Image 1 (cartoon, rainbow, N blue to C red):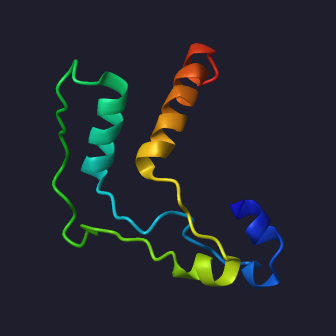
Image 2: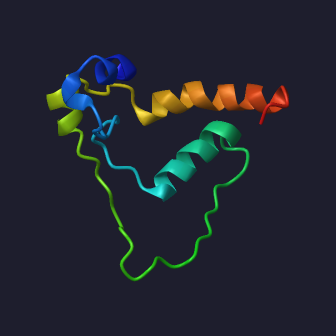
Amino acid sequence: MARKCVTTRTAATNEDFNLSTAQSTTVRELAELIWKKVHGNKRPFRLEHDPPFEHDVQKRIPDVQKAKRVLGFEATTTLDHMLDEVIPWIKAEIDAGRV
């Protein structure tokens, strides 16, 4: 859908777009969600990380209005649902030796 929006609209030429939902997700939230989908409650989630850089972005909320305005595109697939599709695909790719 997004590819068709971009390739059929002259206003999209040489432009960039956030093709996501407008919901913010931290790296920690993403890591924990993936962990739970892969391991369930069998293994506890534990995150270790370096301290952030002094001027590091602490929270990012994508602005998706340009995609909606120029392309008429609004993402509706949630991160949770997308991971339900992507994780089994990645597992299959690993099992097949392609990753």
